[in-house]
Image 1 (cartoon, rainbow, N blue to C red):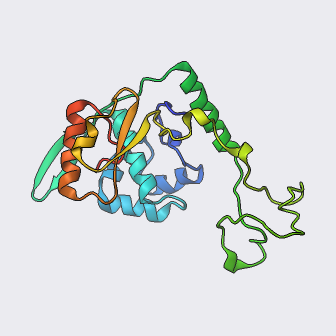
Image 2 (cartoon, helix red, strand yellow):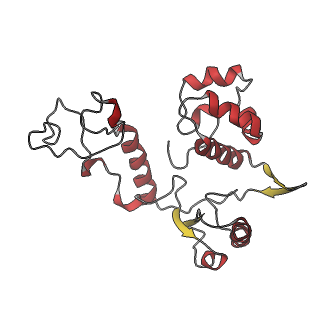
Image 3 (cartoon, rainbow, N blue to C red):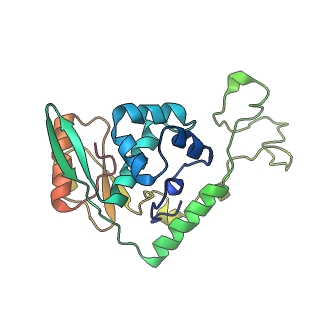
Length: 220
């Protein structure tokens, strides 16, 4: 999906498959707003994750974030017995034409990139689907022969200019305390809160980011 593509229908969501349309229709979800309301509800969200093959909690949360940004609605965050309404910041990255072109090229390469599996994964179930470099001296796969599966190579990488960019077009900056937020450029950078940060400090970091107009990629 393009970095700045507008989510007009549920089919525009990233990682969406055609088979999901019928499954969501069975749950009474046909429009974008209906999916947004369903993802806000914990029980219905779990139902969607369980029903859609290939959709986990991370993808569901990503869909919720995209749909919330597109609709411009307020999210309701439960804090004990109180309900605090928070308006999601609709911050957009200021991208040059060169960066935009590189992001589009990266999306196209991502769509064309094949799946990489270790040698003879189809023969021995215990090998699984994880990637391992073929090292056998007689390995045809190591020699990149055309009738063997594809091997991870440098040519499959995306453009170096946007290699660490978020799909939204922002450069990701990892932060662990509110002080680190002050050095972030809100025009081109967005923050991701570290996984080891506790709830109290996470709230402080989010509040500081909202004050400075900085986008939080993993807002809770």
